[in-house]
Length: 402
Image 1 (cartoon, one colour):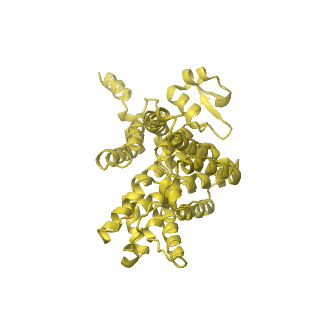
Image 2 (cartoon, rainbow, N blue to C red; image 1 turned 180 degrees about the horizontal axis):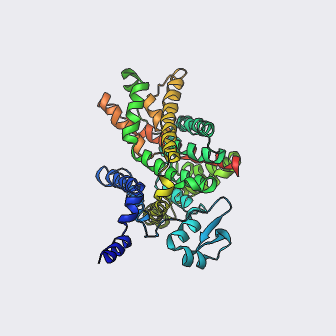
Image 3 (cartoon, one colour; image 1 turned 90 degrees about the vertical axis):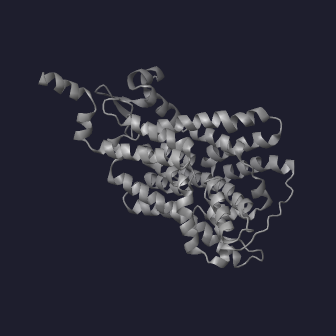
């Protein structure tokens, strides 16, 4: 009888969980992400799928986790090392399962992030940016943390490719972080994706103390009257074409991201593809985001995720995010030394790519200092500039290593 109970016990996941307590850490991470996504409404479209996928990937015996290939593309298939890129698609699905099929065919090839960018482009109104070109400078300045963190990560022992992937977390741009990491350091995809989207979700928590520390009350009360210039339809149509052309010349590796972002915006602005624009903004973007989130989470298995390396990535990612915000604020203060029309330094912090969360935080802080001080449209201009700038920064890093 004892043998029967022993066998029944060993059939469950309890024996493995007791033997390897890191599974409990993964469950805790999943519940924290679920809390942030559901209760706090922080990026629920991504955090909820990622959190639930983490649960599924970490039930011992469930075989839901992704089997990571080595740097040569070799995976262990029933005791035999095979090259994942030489396996027929039906073999990947049959031998490794559906999740590995989706991961290697859609994530690791870099297919899904550009599609998300197309949806983001279709949602984005670049009017405030076009009307106030100065916002381009704020978006560029707010990427400095990416490159500072790259140097820091390299100094701590990460390879140059891994350091570049870690640095891009600072752009607060999940799709760019996933795309770059899938190309340069796929072994770090799980922790980098969690760091990127977690810090995006925590913008309302992370950015306000930074802005208060770097600005005086007088600076936070600077008013920036919004006088929207009339942006013609022709300008709106020409903008995505021109940006794509410039990005293609300056940073060719960024075209896959910037190009799809601008293509989505062209669909929105051209006026003759409304049904496609609506699909890209809603159905397509939501579906791809859902598949992206839950598939990435299956790479977050306890034996790979719970490590000192993951803690270092999370810490470096937070540093990159903070330094990007600092870069935007400090550059706005620098502009004020030469500008007659002063820029509220808090607007510079919106130069990260976390759209529209960062712009909303700046608006809220402006109103907190003066109920008549509305900064939203200026912050949105910097915010959408940050979307373009982070993709270009990712392209520069990618072009350096590819």
